[in-house]
Image 1 (cartoon, one colour):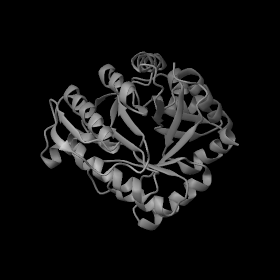
Image 2: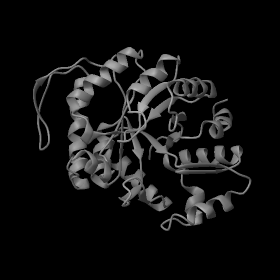
Image 3: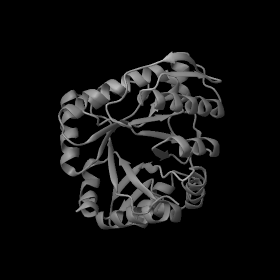
Image 4: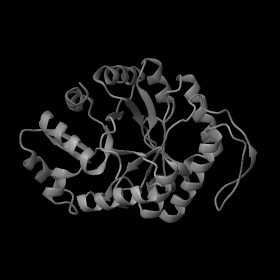
Length: 307
């Protein structure tokens, strides 16, 4: 099992801040509230792109780290990605963490005329990219000839950090096994088939499934202990956890109330109850890194857990 005493880390994924001043204000507020990481996301649309806002937010903060959660690997060649990541890491004094995934929004691929390969192929391509980027960021000259990438004697600027952390957001046994061996952090998505709108998914948040996924990571990690992350989908501050869970489950057919109350992908209750839920998730699954989209709702929880 992953360590159950790893220090907590809390991330804030910015969404809906459409002005540069808003981004900067959120970054400052998140640092003051005790968040550890600021994140963006990588989707084709009218929102911010993934990387430039991170640099802007780092420029007005002193401590908080930055991480795209997560880049779509199919939109980034690993050599060009390594160049961008290293540059941002230097410009932000070594505060960058790289988050990358296999891509899932088939509507975005269709919009830009890109081939949407089956999940197995996208995940295999991601695995190759992770190995290439890791070596480039570490300062190696890289030659690589795989099923998806072929590069010859490539060298890029290394990261400022001696070891820039890489988070891989994946599901599936083979992809989790590769992440267990190569990633510093694993984003446990626990999602199923992408629904027709290209954004929503079938969810697989049942606690038994999460037990199995975490056990599989531990089995495949060769003694490594990657940090486990979840992107929390809802934070609901309420005096009635059961009622909140019941309301959510009504729109998620694959989830029952008991699992909704336990899953770390939903944080429900008073601030004290949510703090207890986060501690329980670390004890059961070793999950210590929680990313949310609700700054004000989680700030009092962070205060309870890190004071």
